[in-house]
View 1 (cartoon, rainbow, N blue to C red):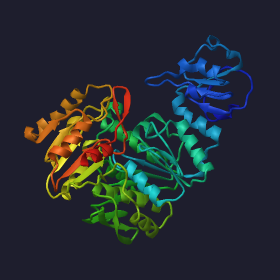
View 2: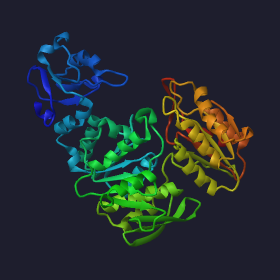
View 3: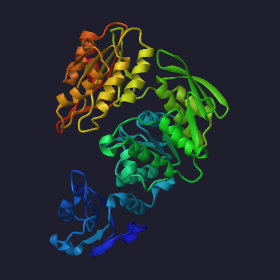
View 4: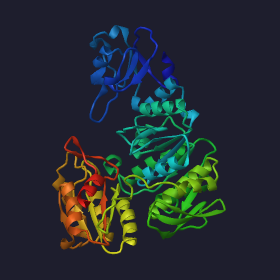
Length: 486
């Protein structure tokens, strides 16, 4: 019964009856007979408040991180209570012990960085076969899709997904690895067969407080590489260059500026459906058309090519797969219309993300670029004016609107974004504020957009909801855009 605590320091507070473990959960609503309930202290909910509910539902073991008085609980006599300090950090090992370390039976590829994680995971899953994926757009095991709450799930859920992937015959587990997950230990129990660092720009400082902390969290992924494997680093990014220069023998370099990089690329020209690119990898030069647009996507392609080559797959096979890959949902996704204009929906929600998409759009636009965007509530406040400054660099007209305001006042968020436009003296007749997101998109299409223009609707991309207050309502930028294009 205590095999689950192998390599874990624990203290038995009370021994109950013997039983065979049928499952482990930290959500009391999922507890069944002979389950283990893990009571964790969260930022909003304390799992210790649900111990009695777990016992009533059939839990035979309770793992706590506070030394509770077991006699306070009805039916405690038959229940084992175990104390584990800071159990969230140990949960991955507990789960691994129970599921017999499924992570050692599959190749795991981790992608971290501020921008490009989702696109990179999409590229990887379109090249590799028999894959599972977790990330911003959801989780998938082979052909079966699941919704997701966090970019990187709690360690217990992660191990369950890996275990299920192994049982169903998946050979590769592709995962977006968030800085939160790296910082709080959700992935501590893993070893990666390949890890990609895309870039680093300001984001999540509400959690990390400083860019130094944010960078330190991202770098942790390279300490989790399996012995003998190499990390993949974008050396054109200043933070990527720092990582690479610390010990370049541990990494494969990716660049569109340095022809001596291990994996080098160029954009030859933009096409109607994407772009023609050149890739130079391991002495092999390939020219191909892909359904992606922009330098930032060339970085994503190069990172994925480097990662897959490091796993032993040849460049020619990879290139053939890239040629037939479709565009990425919610990433530079174009909306078909009869207006003679280009309408693009993109997930860009940082200043760097906006700039990447916007400048690419500017390069391929005949006339003006109109941008509709906002910023999420209850998140990093400092990036809001920075996003406005980025938009000002490529936009001819801007409409500021709500994103996911959450519990913040949308007007306050919009005012903070507007400060960025004021600081760069962006003309007041070149922007407006429309708080209602649907009205903002409608106005842009019906009253601003002209033939030859491009409209960028940024911030939500693939998301099919909007969070206002604590309510999550259906909202899809792509649906709204199509509605007003008719």
